[in-house]
Image (cartoon, rainbow, N blue to C red; front, side, top):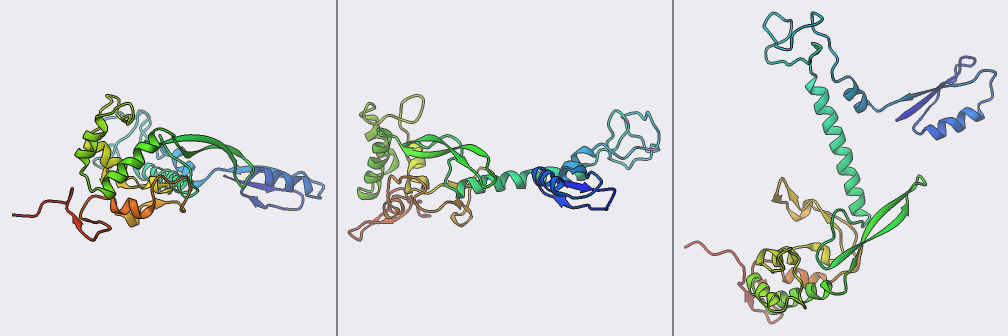
Length: 264
């Protein structure tokens, strides 16, 4: 949102991106006249305001569109007979989506947590000040003393012993008090173990956009932060050795656990 000043005496008409800066400039303006401030909203908000513009041919037209109403076939009108500008609505939606995604990317690259914390961590809310001087609350990940030990044990069983996800889940279910489950029913499943093993946040990085439309996205398309954005629970080498698929153990043997079956 921009603010434009105009002085009728001298014709001074600068434009400022912030209203506060415009008011400071107006106070420093030396002229017999008083500058008038005009606020200009962004272009995409004007599209939303003018969404229902474009009067049809006749006032009081019925909402049912006929061939001789002056509107094209397939067009819709509201109760006042105004054409619905779908192009303006699409442009507004695209702009708001882009701005929201950009804000999420900036938060992730800064190392802040978005959404509930993963198993093994808890969210610590801190207050930070942005470059404009505004104070905001942000969440960072800190290890949880009990569940963090469970995550480390899962990676040991997976990376060092090459156990399958179902076998690890069975071991965890033998002692629910020592290994509390992340599910409400208190039972570990192979899917829950796999979700922990494949979560790159345990390496100390913030990760976002790992899926697109519910499907896994390539690793090069992920949005990640710098290393050690929070305290890691496993190192990078252990994390990569624990991933699904054929993994190479320190002895040099290949572990076929959880690898896709070969075609017969």
